[in-house]
Image 1 (cartoon, rainbow, N blue to C red):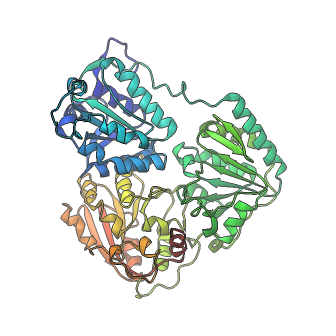
Image 2: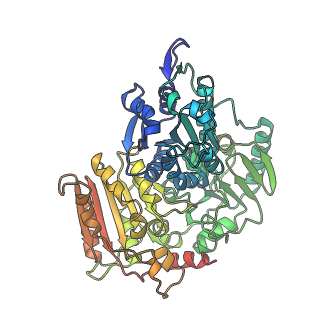
Image 3: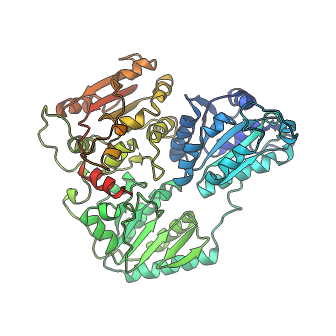
Length: 571
């Protein structure tokens, strides 16, 4: 309907769905409720190209929207307000902390009910406070708003989507029941991304010129550190080219793992402050100039705040400003700075040397270039398992990890173009699997989908196995069965605490429980030894259907990196 005249009418739900389609939304996750049924009817029946994906609860729906947004650029979940919307808040807070643009759409009471003082206690309402949901979402979103008239609907919807996309933060939108099918003019022009939050031209030019001068003068060694905001802005290819043009070393971060960089010869590993390898730490902290692109000062990326700033020249390129040796250039956006730096880098000779090593063990704890030892029937350890996974991953794989799975998986050096995501700095148990489910519906759905899941985290969202089976998805899901919260155990190693234990499930049998048919659309595997895991990895080179691998591990076995990481988490 884009481009039609203002005489063309659509209802508010249709308008919203057309705008969501414009930002690459082909699926909306969520659960209906009586206040949001008109929207859901339009979602199913309208001519907009957006499909509904039902989940088992609203929290998981929003996790799915998060994973979808990481892959497609934007995500959406639809719920009823009250129990529905408040059930999304943990995932929304995670999206806020980890810079994920998504929209939670909630249906609410009719406008006349909202505007009329009453002593009635309506269902789903907190007392008589109809604004409670808006107030709760305010600190964890870029905008928390409700449409109250047809006149404001179009501009409010457009502004919220643009705000979310440009700030990389979630938004919360309530639509009263009677307005969900109220008619307004159809959109006639694209969303206005070029009219708000633009770089200050003078500041952008000054930041670029100073950056160019520093790089030109730093002729020996240069290092670029990659953060997650780079992926959010879809700028990886530009920065790969910058690394090559400038002759830089490059390092990734915990929240910003990225196979596009880890597969480069210039990669020195994974920078996490004091927990980095010696090669990586020195390359980042001792280069003549270090450019941190899209990195935030979060606890996990900094190795629990053990990172050291380059004492010679430090250039930090954040979402909406740049800091060069302490000088702040406001209103300079990452999306503008990087393409401009790429243009300038073509005129700069490459650095004379790259801090590198032919020994891949100097870069990552687990690297595919490190030969596998002879595999035996001895019990798996975390270290032997993760090295086997390092050899399992292939270019273009999609990997989502959940806390323990991602903490250990972060120490793998990944092949080219692997798409890698974990719990982020919010670190909510269960989000890793929920976001993986969302990604299986995204533009990445035809790539090999792999999940590395701790058993404790998986307990929180396991029912979404049914969603994968229902929609005939192809996934390899590895459950690390060590009877509980290994990341928490590592904080007090050798000290038994029952609160870190969970009930042991027969994870490999769960696909059948959730409606799968073994050998047809699902499979389950149980693994205890190195040779057993190797056999399963061979079988799952091209996984068909939902495949759950129950990997038995010693509850007290801890990888060396995990122990160092958890030691720093002691408060």
